[in-house]
Length: 136
Image (cartoon, rainbow, N blue to C red; front, side):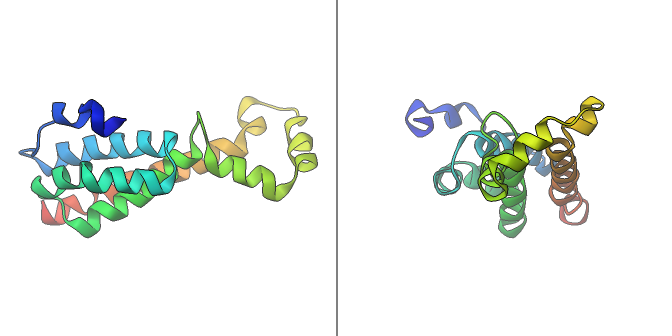
């Protein structure tokens, strides 16, 4: 659907700055991770986003490392939160219900969701932008 709607045609095929290209790539990849499964997302990224990244001066290995971390952040994030759904199946429904009945502040009640998002968000910023200091 994304390929047939030609959404990617609205984006430039190359950016003057690797920094601006990486910022756009990170946003696109996290959103794709939020709504798509892993195999479909990799095929879509290979056909569309990767070519823009390569032509903007982003090294292919760096791009795919950023893709993996961005997808993981997307898998942890709502609306689907695929990794949290899988965790519920592994842990069991009784443990999840017991965790939901805990009282405390908003952070204490939702720590199991907020902490992975913070950790992966920081990791994504480091993986995406620190290497650009050395080669861009």
